[in-house]
Amino acid sequence: MIEDSPYRCVRCGKRMHQTVDQDDISNRPLVRHECWSCGHAFEERRRAAGGPVSSGAEYIVGANRPERLRNA
Image (cartoon, rainbow, N blue to C red; front, side, top):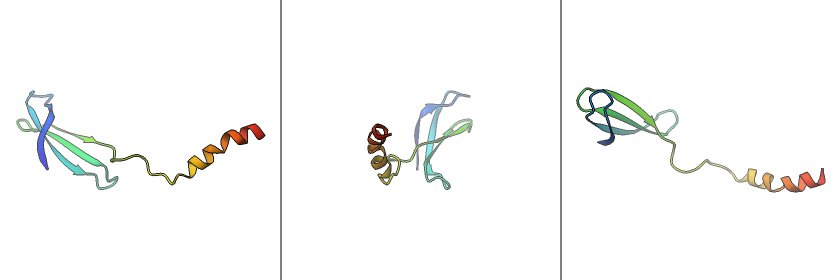
């Protein structure tokens, strides 16, 4: 999908367009900003949507930590 980018080119100062894609390896969103005029481009790698995936086991272990410290 190609749309207008919020950035301006650092070389010529004109508006850029952005292409939104997905990284093949990490499945993170990948946004490529490219100048309409001179062709200067850079890539922006964004974090995946949502938070870290966790099973919840670390919260159970963390809840017992104060009790373990008192009994040590």
